[in-house]
Length: 474
Image (cartoon, rainbow, N blue to C red; front, side, top):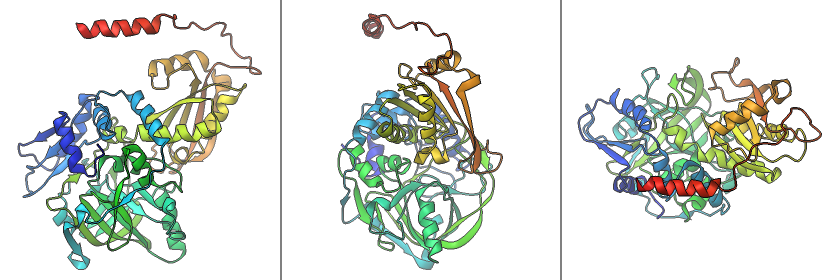
């Protein structure tokens, strides 16, 4: 079953024992964020959290940690909740092969029940806003899917964008949005500002679980997120037309906020506790003027905790960062076997590959750095042999311990782009990047004394299955 809205997914989480309802009264700060901070520490089957008794609010409904475990991520993809990490990535790859699946335009969207327009807009009346970390500069909308179009080619559906960006609430109808230069919305904004125009945007909150996944996926500029959602869902993604901007938005959203990014206008935004586990300071960021809010009766505010990994965002952006990197590398280097980019938004990427000839692994590593994801995120790339599982960190550490010789296997490339939030950058947005070749040298590279590598005994796989069955009977 494909989920068309957040509420149907929450119902499934509840039935599967993956939703924890907090019925006792809690303080908006710090209780809700602290609970969401703690939840992923319950392990790979951590539940989502639902709060509806929040002190100081008369009618609040807040959902946290919706994607915050591998069990919840599996259910979002209609897989059994016991599905393992590597298996979920492999299934993601299989479904990607069906991309694109055109979305379905529907009438009577769920978010059209209530409306505020113009000077009557007041976001504080619609959402129970809370801070996530005690050093945050204000309230944030950090799980909204932001929809925009290329102003030079607005009819090209592939050049529209659905992305997740940090958004600070600056007033009842004013928001600040951070358009990371490597993201599509930054290109849309640049083109609008060069033409002396504002950029229309629609922010959708409380979306079905696959919309949140695709909005976090580093796709190519001309690839349509709704078409990927259809492939992942196994059914066309339902969309509707936002009444003010005409932008295509998810049909089942809880809240749709429409307005414009005001051209050539910037205000201080931040600080904010980011996915890097560090606060980012105040910066001049774009300003959104909100002109219309549409929302379901009694909307659910879906929020996302960020901080020291692992938190919900690390589960949300794990498989969907690995898979596009794998697809883009595989198209040019069929030797690539697997990609693990699960760590801190893929600031570290691990790739396993066969080699054509000496130096080949280093070339694969350099290609990682020029993908849509690698341009802004990948800071360290570790390349391992095809028989090393990049999702098995003990195996990766073995490869680093025995294959990597710093004399020739560390390739440092200076002054490459990285998102400004990366705390290791001496100048924000610029960093030296590192490729670590932890593969066995092949001709004409004859370094090292590897001899014959110990391999699994032929009967090992059979015995693993037998032992698993015996252990399950205990």
